[in-house]
Image 1 (cartoon, helix red, strand yellow):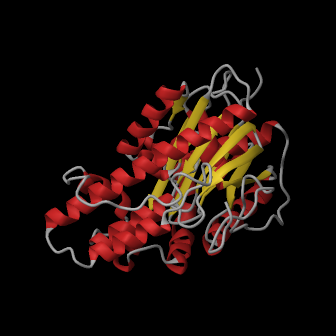
Image 2 (cartoon, rainbow, N blue to C red):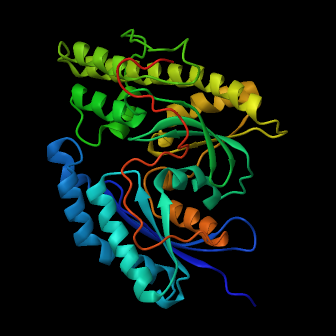
Length: 357
């Protein structure tokens, strides 16, 4: 009987130290033998955001322990591993370097293939951890560092349809939460606070809502929140502002998703229109509901990873590594860390003032 491929995945792109072991299965859904994630929330809470140097130091302190725990929980021996996959970018370079160097040393010592994984590709493939997912599909990637629509033709083949021209959606959530007075990480707590407020209390801007196709902008919304937050003192006001922000984000995503559906259909003539929503912000329940509603209205099948695979994790890095392993797409041990590593490297850079849409 042929041995099932075992992949060790390692993730250190930002403020989670993670390791996972997955096993290739007869079907397309792998066996997740372990998935260990160590958060650094307590390390960065007092600073109101991630401090790169502290994050890297924490990765150095924990990575050996986390990888050892993932191997132990998998019920396998380190020598059973067939390939070592690790996030090589995008992310904070000091954090990426910790995982990269550890994975390279491990692969060299075991004499096993080294596989550099794009963190965004891990998110894009995360639903494949638990469900059959056929290509092509439309992807909405919404996280702390990225917000974009992509057409996924096949593994490794991406075409960007739209992107944020300034802040990522997760960043907008965290910064809004900070302005309202919610401790880091603010996004999840802002969602809970919003449930208690009046979403119609404050009328907030929805930048480039009716232009730019499915490109998005959140900086103007964030600036409006800053101006209003200076005059807010009562808890009820904070709840109403949080609710108004949440509602505005949902309205923006609803409209922009409809644009993305139209563009995807013009590119992909498929009978089944799958719509994958991945990344940390995909855990937001109200955003999920809005995107499900939009999908049903337009005949798309919305697919979300389970909550445990929405945020940064190593299982998604392992599944991307497994796909590369099957294609024998191995990397050299001098592969660099890539702080910026777009899935569609041919897409124009749309950031900053003066961007033409």
